[in-house]
Length: 157
Image (tube, rainbow, N blue to C red; front, side, top):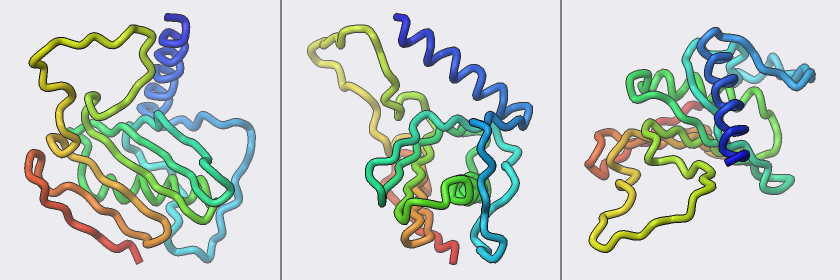
């Protein structure tokens, strides 16, 4: 329960920080190369939550973001992806996954799992809008229509 309370407090601070367009910083200024046209230097004025940010190796970073379905648009996905691309200029490989429904998230839970016979379980990821940005290809792949497995890839080059 203590872990859940801490996570809730951190999420609350982060959400309100984003809603008021304030930076939560660890005190380090990041230098972003001015010659890189793909870097988005300003924080987008879109409320979103980074709920997972892990450096898996010296070459790979994964970031997961929650964005309200009401704020979901390809333009907003592009702004968030390019912003995070600029915030974390290394390592070489970066993926940013943007989800729009709480059921898509694997949030920490202190409770034991309950199994009820006949339950369908979690909804499919494709029941809700989502997008994935990949720095290696500088492209965004996204679900076009919830409930229909039809995808589109958009190059940012």
